Amino acid sequence: MREPAAPAPAPAGEDGAGGTRITLHDAAGRLGVHYQTAYRWVRSGALRAAKIGGVYQVEVGDLEAFDRERRRPSPPPPERVVRDWERFAAQLHQALIAGEEGAARDLVEGLVGSGVRVVDCCDRLIGPAMRKIGDQWEAGQLTVADERRASAICERLLGRLTPAPPGRPRGVAVVCSPPVEEHQLPGGMATAALREDHWRVHHLGVNVPFEELVGMIRRVGPDLVVVSVTWLPASEQAEALAAAVRRLGPPVLVGGSGRALAELITQARAA
Image (cartoon, rainbow, N blue to C red; front, side, top):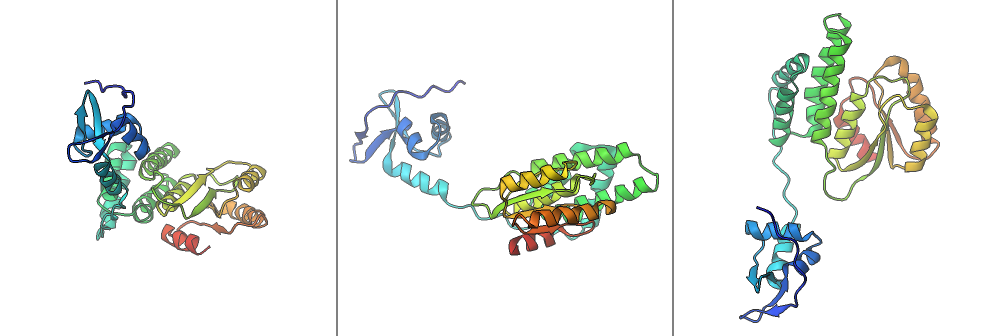
Protein backbone atom coordinates (compact mmCIF):
# COMPACT_ATOMS: atom_id res chain seq x y z
CA MET A 1 0.00 0.00 0.00
CA ARG A 2 1.40 3.35 -0.99
CA GLU A 3 2.08 5.78 1.86
CA PRO A 4 0.58 9.26 1.63
CA ALA A 5 2.64 12.32 0.85
CA ALA A 6 3.29 14.75 3.67
CA PRO A 7 0.25 16.98 4.17
CA ALA A 8 0.51 20.72 4.45
CA PRO A 9 1.19 21.86 8.03
CA ALA A 10 -1.86 22.71 10.09
CA PRO A 11 -2.06 24.92 13.15
CA ALA A 12 -1.46 23.36 16.54
CA GLY A 13 -4.45 22.61 18.71
CA GLU A 14 -5.58 21.64 22.18
CA ASP A 15 -6.95 18.21 22.97
CA GLY A 16 -9.84 17.59 25.29
CA ALA A 17 -7.56 17.26 28.31
CA GLY A 18 -5.77 20.53 27.57
CA GLY A 19 -2.58 19.04 26.11
CA THR A 20 -0.91 20.76 23.16
CA ARG A 21 -1.05 18.98 19.81
CA ILE A 22 1.08 19.50 16.72
CA THR A 23 0.83 17.98 13.28
CA LEU A 24 2.84 14.94 12.37
CA HIS A 25 4.60 17.13 9.80
CA ASP A 26 5.81 19.45 12.59
CA ALA A 27 6.59 16.46 14.85
CA ALA A 28 8.87 15.04 12.15
CA GLY A 29 10.64 18.40 12.00
CA ARG A 30 11.20 18.42 15.74
CA LEU A 31 12.58 14.88 15.60
CA GLY A 32 14.84 15.78 12.67
CA VAL A 33 13.46 13.04 10.39
CA HIS A 34 11.52 12.88 7.14
CA TYR A 35 7.73 12.90 7.37
CA GLN A 36 7.55 9.36 5.98
CA THR A 37 9.78 8.11 8.80
CA ALA A 38 7.47 9.65 11.40
CA TYR A 39 4.48 8.24 9.53
CA ARG A 40 5.96 4.72 9.69
CA TRP A 41 6.45 5.13 13.45
CA VAL A 42 2.79 6.05 13.77
CA ARG A 43 1.67 3.10 11.63
CA SER A 44 3.81 0.71 13.70
CA GLY A 45 2.40 2.07 16.97
CA ALA A 46 5.77 3.37 18.19
CA LEU A 47 4.57 6.99 18.14
CA ARG A 48 1.06 7.83 19.33
CA ALA A 49 -0.98 10.05 17.03
CA ALA A 50 -4.63 10.82 16.31
CA LYS A 51 -6.12 11.62 12.92
CA ILE A 52 -8.12 14.84 13.25
CA GLY A 53 -9.70 16.44 10.23
CA GLY A 54 -7.72 14.15 7.93
CA VAL A 55 -4.39 15.19 9.48
CA TYR A 56 -2.30 13.19 11.97
CA GLN A 57 -1.65 15.11 15.16
CA VAL A 58 0.65 14.27 18.06
CA GLU A 59 0.55 15.45 21.64
CA VAL A 60 3.75 17.29 22.52
CA GLY A 61 4.11 15.27 25.73
CA ASP A 62 3.92 11.99 23.77
CA LEU A 63 6.42 13.33 21.25
CA GLU A 64 8.92 14.32 23.95
CA ALA A 65 8.60 10.95 25.68
CA PHE A 66 9.10 9.15 22.35
CA ASP A 67 12.18 11.25 21.56
CA ARG A 68 13.73 10.59 24.98
CA GLU A 69 13.24 6.87 24.53
CA ARG A 70 14.61 6.99 20.98
CA ARG A 71 17.79 8.74 22.12
CA ARG A 72 18.41 6.53 25.13
CA PRO A 73 21.67 4.58 24.54
CA SER A 74 21.16 0.89 23.91
CA PRO A 75 23.17 -1.40 26.18
CA PRO A 76 25.93 -3.23 24.32
CA PRO A 77 25.09 -6.83 23.47
CA PRO A 78 26.59 -9.42 25.81
CA GLU A 79 29.98 -10.58 24.58
CA ARG A 80 29.98 -14.22 23.55
CA VAL A 81 32.81 -16.48 24.69
CA VAL A 82 33.86 -18.97 22.01
CA ARG A 83 35.58 -22.06 23.37
CA ASP A 84 36.38 -23.85 20.10
CA TRP A 85 37.85 -21.33 17.66
CA GLU A 86 39.76 -24.07 15.83
CA ARG A 87 36.52 -25.76 14.77
CA PHE A 88 35.06 -22.52 13.43
CA ALA A 89 38.34 -21.64 11.67
CA ALA A 90 38.34 -25.08 10.01
CA GLN A 91 34.75 -24.54 8.84
CA LEU A 92 35.63 -21.13 7.39
CA HIS A 93 38.72 -22.59 5.70
CA GLN A 94 36.64 -25.25 3.99
CA ALA A 95 34.06 -22.69 2.84
CA LEU A 96 36.78 -20.42 1.44
CA ILE A 97 38.53 -23.29 -0.36
CA ALA A 98 35.23 -24.31 -1.97
CA GLY A 99 34.34 -20.72 -2.85
CA GLU A 100 31.13 -21.02 -0.82
CA GLU A 101 30.70 -17.36 0.05
CA GLY A 102 27.23 -17.83 1.50
CA ALA A 103 28.45 -20.44 3.99
CA ALA A 104 31.40 -18.24 4.97
CA ARG A 105 29.09 -15.24 5.41
CA ASP A 106 26.59 -17.21 7.52
CA LEU A 107 29.37 -18.47 9.78
CA VAL A 108 31.06 -15.11 10.38
CA GLU A 109 27.90 -13.02 10.61
CA GLY A 110 26.34 -15.62 12.92
CA LEU A 111 29.25 -15.27 15.34
CA VAL A 112 29.28 -11.47 15.25
CA GLY A 113 25.50 -11.33 15.56
CA SER A 114 25.67 -13.46 18.70
CA GLY A 115 28.10 -11.08 20.44
CA VAL A 116 31.55 -12.03 19.15
CA ARG A 117 33.75 -9.01 18.49
CA VAL A 118 34.90 -8.35 14.94
CA VAL A 119 38.50 -8.08 16.13
CA ASP A 120 38.29 -11.60 17.59
CA CYS A 121 36.85 -12.94 14.33
CA CYS A 122 39.80 -11.38 12.51
CA ASP A 123 42.43 -12.69 14.94
CA ARG A 124 41.05 -16.14 15.60
CA LEU A 125 38.90 -17.03 12.60
CA ILE A 126 39.74 -15.20 9.36
CA GLY A 127 43.46 -14.90 10.12
CA PRO A 128 44.06 -18.61 10.85
CA ALA A 129 41.92 -19.73 7.90
CA MET A 130 43.79 -17.47 5.48
CA ARG A 131 47.21 -18.44 6.88
CA LYS A 132 46.40 -22.09 6.20
CA ILE A 133 45.36 -21.19 2.67
CA GLY A 134 48.64 -19.32 2.24
CA ASP A 135 50.59 -22.36 3.46
CA GLN A 136 48.71 -24.58 1.03
CA TRP A 137 49.48 -22.19 -1.83
CA GLU A 138 53.19 -22.20 -0.96
CA ALA A 139 53.11 -26.01 -0.91
CA GLY A 140 51.59 -26.07 -4.39
CA GLN A 141 48.27 -27.48 -3.15
CA LEU A 142 46.28 -24.39 -4.19
CA THR A 143 46.51 -21.99 -7.09
CA VAL A 144 46.88 -18.23 -6.98
CA ALA A 145 43.26 -18.05 -8.14
CA ASP A 146 42.16 -20.11 -5.11
CA GLU A 147 44.01 -17.79 -2.74
CA ARG A 148 42.73 -14.61 -4.39
CA ARG A 149 39.14 -15.84 -4.35
CA ALA A 150 39.37 -16.62 -0.64
CA SER A 151 40.88 -13.20 0.08
CA ALA A 152 38.18 -11.45 -1.93
CA ILE A 153 35.44 -13.29 -0.03
CA CYS A 154 36.97 -12.24 3.29
CA GLU A 155 37.27 -8.63 2.15
CA ARG A 156 33.58 -8.54 1.25
CA LEU A 157 32.67 -10.11 4.60
CA LEU A 158 34.63 -7.45 6.46
CA GLY A 159 32.87 -4.73 4.49
CA ARG A 160 29.50 -6.08 5.63
CA LEU A 161 30.58 -6.40 9.27
CA THR A 162 32.03 -2.95 9.85
CA PRO A 163 29.70 -0.06 9.12
CA ALA A 164 30.66 3.11 10.97
CA PRO A 165 29.48 2.56 14.57
CA PRO A 166 27.32 5.23 16.20
CA GLY A 167 28.77 7.66 18.68
CA ARG A 168 31.67 10.04 18.80
CA PRO A 169 34.81 8.63 17.08
CA ARG A 170 38.04 8.18 19.02
CA GLY A 171 39.87 9.92 16.21
CA VAL A 172 40.79 9.70 12.55
CA ALA A 173 43.12 6.93 11.37
CA VAL A 174 44.72 6.10 8.04
CA VAL A 175 45.49 2.46 7.20
CA CYS A 176 47.92 2.00 4.34
CA SER A 177 50.65 -0.30 3.01
CA PRO A 178 54.01 0.32 1.34
CA PRO A 179 53.72 0.34 -2.47
CA VAL A 180 55.35 -3.07 -2.95
CA GLU A 181 53.06 -4.83 -0.44
CA GLU A 182 50.66 -7.11 -2.34
CA HIS A 183 48.33 -8.32 0.40
CA GLN A 184 45.28 -6.14 0.93
CA LEU A 185 43.34 -8.31 3.39
CA PRO A 186 45.53 -7.60 6.49
CA GLY A 187 44.99 -3.86 6.05
CA GLY A 188 41.27 -4.53 5.65
CA MET A 189 41.22 -6.45 8.91
CA ALA A 190 43.08 -3.63 10.68
CA THR A 191 40.49 -1.21 9.29
CA ALA A 192 37.62 -3.39 10.54
CA ALA A 193 39.14 -3.66 14.02
CA LEU A 194 39.70 0.10 14.28
CA ARG A 195 36.20 0.94 13.04
CA GLU A 196 34.69 -1.42 15.58
CA ASP A 197 36.67 0.51 18.20
CA HIS A 198 35.06 3.78 17.03
CA TRP A 199 37.83 5.13 14.83
CA ARG A 200 37.02 6.93 11.60
CA VAL A 201 39.28 5.16 9.13
CA HIS A 202 40.62 6.00 5.67
CA HIS A 203 41.75 2.68 4.18
CA LEU A 204 44.11 3.32 1.24
CA GLY A 205 44.65 -0.29 0.20
CA VAL A 206 47.78 -1.43 -1.65
CA ASN A 207 49.82 -0.36 -4.69
CA VAL A 208 49.58 3.38 -3.95
CA PRO A 209 52.81 5.23 -4.89
CA PHE A 210 54.96 6.36 -1.95
CA GLU A 211 54.64 10.11 -2.62
CA GLU A 212 50.87 9.87 -3.03
CA LEU A 213 50.53 7.96 0.24
CA VAL A 214 52.42 10.67 2.09
CA GLY A 215 50.45 13.38 0.30
CA MET A 216 47.12 11.82 1.22
CA ILE A 217 48.15 11.49 4.86
CA ARG A 218 49.23 15.14 4.88
CA ARG A 219 45.81 16.21 3.52
CA VAL A 220 43.78 14.03 5.87
CA GLY A 221 45.72 15.08 8.99
CA PRO A 222 44.97 11.87 10.93
CA ASP A 223 45.42 11.20 14.62
CA LEU A 224 47.00 7.82 13.84
CA VAL A 225 48.57 6.04 10.87
CA VAL A 226 48.76 2.25 10.64
CA VAL A 227 51.18 0.76 8.10
CA SER A 228 50.12 -2.79 7.26
CA VAL A 229 52.92 -5.01 5.96
CA THR A 230 53.08 -8.81 5.78
CA TRP A 231 55.49 -9.44 2.91
CA LEU A 232 59.10 -9.52 4.14
CA PRO A 233 60.60 -7.69 1.11
CA ALA A 234 58.22 -4.78 1.85
CA SER A 235 59.46 -4.30 5.43
CA GLU A 236 62.24 -1.85 4.55
CA GLN A 237 59.85 0.29 2.51
CA ALA A 238 57.33 0.15 5.36
CA GLU A 239 59.89 1.61 7.77
CA ALA A 240 60.75 4.35 5.27
CA LEU A 241 57.06 5.17 4.95
CA ALA A 242 56.65 5.24 8.73
CA ALA A 243 59.62 7.61 9.06
CA ALA A 244 58.18 9.96 6.43
CA VAL A 245 54.81 10.00 8.19
CA ARG A 246 56.36 10.64 11.60
CA ARG A 247 57.94 13.78 10.19
CA LEU A 248 54.40 14.99 9.49
CA GLY A 249 53.49 14.59 13.15
CA PRO A 250 51.00 11.74 13.71
CA PRO A 251 52.00 8.59 15.59
CA VAL A 252 52.60 5.54 13.40
CA LEU A 253 52.07 1.85 14.14
CA VAL A 254 53.70 -0.67 11.81
CA GLY A 255 51.94 -4.02 11.65
CA GLY A 256 53.46 -7.34 10.72
CA SER A 257 52.66 -10.93 9.91
CA GLY A 258 51.30 -12.81 12.90
CA ARG A 259 50.66 -9.77 15.09
CA ALA A 260 47.28 -9.76 16.82
CA LEU A 261 44.81 -7.01 15.99
CA ALA A 262 43.81 -6.86 19.66
CA GLU A 263 47.35 -5.61 20.29
CA LEU A 264 46.87 -2.98 17.56
CA ILE A 265 43.73 -1.70 19.29
CA THR A 266 45.54 -1.41 22.63
CA GLN A 267 48.42 0.49 21.00
CA ALA A 268 46.05 2.73 19.03
CA ARG A 269 44.25 3.80 22.19
CA ALA A 270 47.57 4.64 23.83
CA ALA A 271 49.04 6.48 20.84
